[in-house]
Image (cartoon, rainbow, N blue to C red; front, side, top):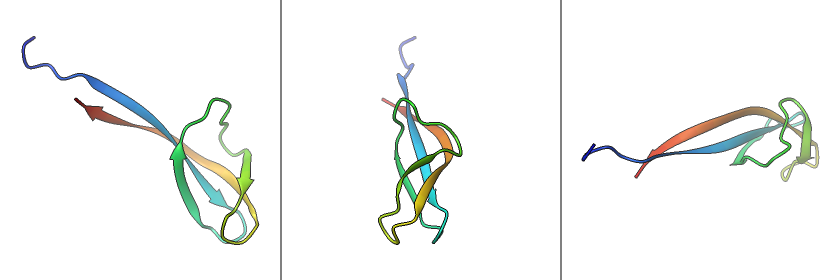
Length: 60
């Protein structure tokens, strides 16, 4: 097709701190598992868990 656009899906991971509730969105890394502990919170030094993994579609 002449007018078809190329679609690219970018995966993201949302982390949420169990202590203060702060959320952070970052690019997905291999090995990310839902509800697993991922890193320390940058705000309060609590533990952040992976709450959501999703993809966004971009058209070129």
